Image (cartoon, rainbow, N blue to C red; front, top):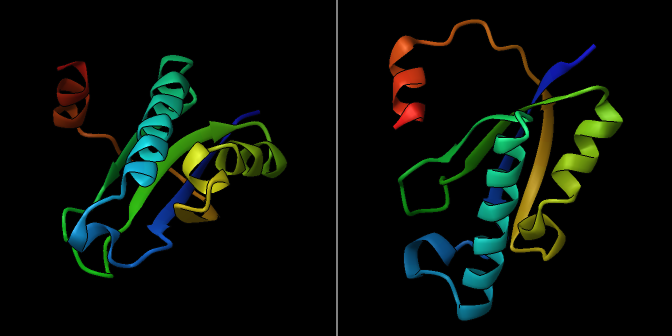
Length: 109
């Protein structure tokens, strides 16, 4: 049975959000985005996004489904930005309680 999980990501270089990404960070972040797009197409990722503040309080979240905590940890650890050390990540069990129609409509574009 699948469970919901959330992983929170934060830049390891705190000035990344304020000053922008280096060329290497930008390449890795593009891989990160493509990884999440693939998981979204596979119906693993339910929602992914980030806060828009550009100081050290900024973070991103990925809400997704996995069969076990071990599988969830592998999803998080296989994120290219986590592997490359551009982001550090923390995993949490998570329960989706409500999803508004607006979010569903927005996701359909």
